[in-house]
Length: 211
Length: 172
Image (tube, rainbow over the protein chains, first blue to last red):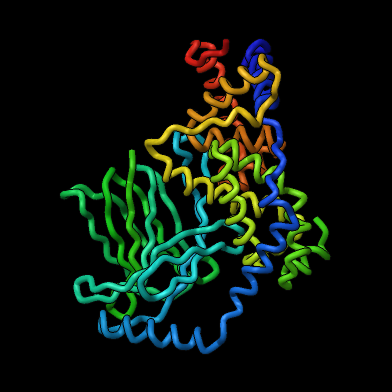
């Protein structure tokens, strides 16, 4: 980069700095207002224990009646590498989740502070009970690695873009003994990967591969 | 970051958490505003961030990492909120910038150009310029490689220059 270019970029930074001054927070976000709001929400969370028990029983009954079976929840977490959108460098990929069984959405903030939103659902797929799912988007040629804390004994891939192989998935054992799953984008399209336990698919990863 | 405040916040002390939040409140709100372009959405997102952070602060191991940690939560929320904007133009609110006419026009043009950058580039510039974060800190907040942050920042600045230089924006 020439000195002229560097100077031009520095000038642009300065102009941006002037165009984006720090803004005072509105009254609704003042520390006092926030403390009050947090106290209120903490108070609201103090629900009588019988309510949790009642809701838990109701949820189990609904699931049991609706799907015939409820699988225990599983845990998936991990990290890996991901190419940046433009192919330059790489970006880290982290997920952490306490997967719940049942229908609905659950939003989690993982240990490292990255909030992750996952849908967890129960449904019958080819006779198997799926207790949780995750959507992943990767680029063609990119690989991601997920470490699985729960014991899965196999994977089944289902490609849904004609005969083209959308992604390749492989299970392996990490140095620390946990199970790793590596997913590589092969061609654009969508695919599903089922994580199997005791012959049933208990976790579904929907993979979208982009160019 | 005060470890004692952090310890009390982890025990559910809302006032202690609010004191931690106070150290970053203006940066959080400004970042949300420049990323989303709407005061109301910025307020919502910051409040959501604060609520989530308070309920999850027990998972924060190092008090010193508080700022980066809460910014990561914010940036993820912004990313999700931005997805709901698809097809909508960012609403620019120039009342929050300089009252000087020349500066004001320049700021409006720059912010319009900034709004048209890809989200990741915009995030990098806002965190760098507004927050004063280093590329490795931004990388941690956005889940990127520090080298990628640096290269994307340069390209984003070049892109802004081209956008402004092409006369795409009325700078009067």
